[in-house]
Length: 385
Image (cartoon, rainbow, N blue to C red; front, top):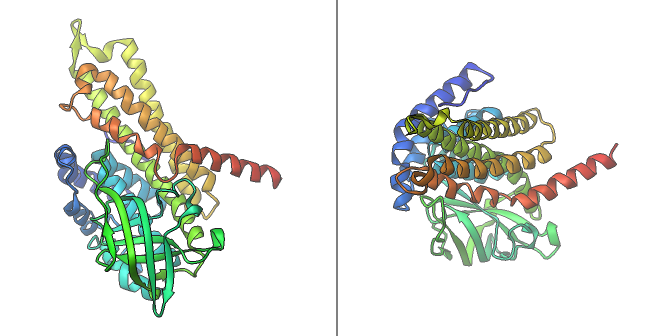
């Protein structure tokens, strides 16, 4: 059952309709097979790129569609409803492009953005390290100037579609001045001295590899630095604010898929001579699931509209990420319950949905970190009154 949407323009409605068509034909039929085989859907990203769906929030000058986040996120949700791996991959790609689009020079944007937004090149985001997850400022991967290059040494961890990406937005330490000693570099995948570690063995999103990036005296030209030296942490956190909205939209899409499957099953499945959806206990469960999905969608859309209006949306992004990902975990778990024993088997997708729902509560800042961000913003707001 497609989500009932109020879209701001006719063009936005056309984009969502196009996305639903592509999702139904090119994504949903392959999802279970690819996830079972841990197969990365690289060609599907090219399909989305050719359809103009990889650059929705970016300027038309470089091949984007200049769409507001309110529209981009609803397109992203539709993709995640069909296939969570592709939705998360698109969200990460969009976040990887953000430092280039927002802080890069025109020369850098002219060189890279057109191929990125067309889907010919896939980007990934490399911030986390084994000892610098929630505390991003503690990162230790280091870049030292050597002539016209940086020599980079260190390891980045938990990198989505590592090994499949064509370039990485990498955050490294360029000085020991704490939070002001981090810079942002663009590293192409075939950089000598850059290697990809073995893929992690994950409980979900198995179609997308997650692995370490290992830099061993890798040379990255200084002209591939985005922003000034020392601006990296600000750039990273700025990108994460928008990335959290992407993960919120993906989580809502996953929850919508689980709700749709639960409703469909409950109409077809009969017990005691009638469809199980006619039993009040199950009706209440489905109603709570629907309320959670719709509430989470409204929460991320409010944050997106604030972003589009140029307002501070940091607290709202954290709330959206927290609410949407917690809702996805609850809704997917309840979907398994609706299907009963069948839901615990791989004959139905809800067991996969439940496994996939866990990691959105962790990446782009754990939900515990989101609570800290929300409380900090509340404190700042109260002090400014």
